[in-house]
Length: 242
Image 1: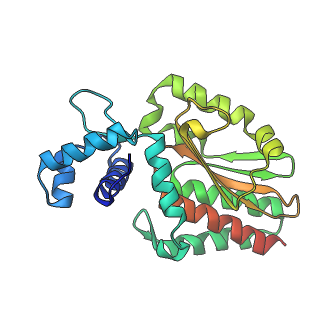
Image 2: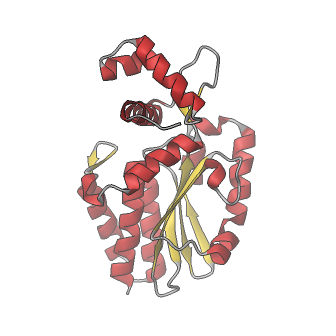
């Protein structure tokens, strides 16, 4: 079943509204956005649900994206030039990148620079930040991650904890090869039930040609913002440390 352009736009609107509101998106909201009837939106949502791109968590609720829906969205973002992203959560991207540069360049040691970049990512995204420093995995922002509404469920917290326990050996063994690597929900090679997304940038450092920095957060997030910022963090670290 092929997706139409309007269905794609509705799917992307659901993803973006859900990221902002953390609540299922209803047909009335979308009808206002697209200036069509609620019935038209409901028909298109039914088709998107048949394709497995959105789901209805409760009988009377709106819709939320599935992992497959997020993957289609992320693939679309990856095709866009990075310079099309101009803001992060209402703040100019260049200001956020400048803050990253200052944090990194103010450090006199490579390990401190990497830690500073991770801490900046935590502050800018509200997610958990991570990086490899030699054979160690540096984590920051665990408490920030678990304040997000998705983690009111203890089972999800335990699933994330299991993922974190296994992340460093997996990174060392798998060595994801793309400059920017994105694993959504069940795509995660470990912690498949944790319903989180791992976005990591590979960069060269004094420690390894396969060093990584990134974030781990709920599947509900502003992918365009986070992807751009993680990519920039890796680029700045590589340019500064080598």
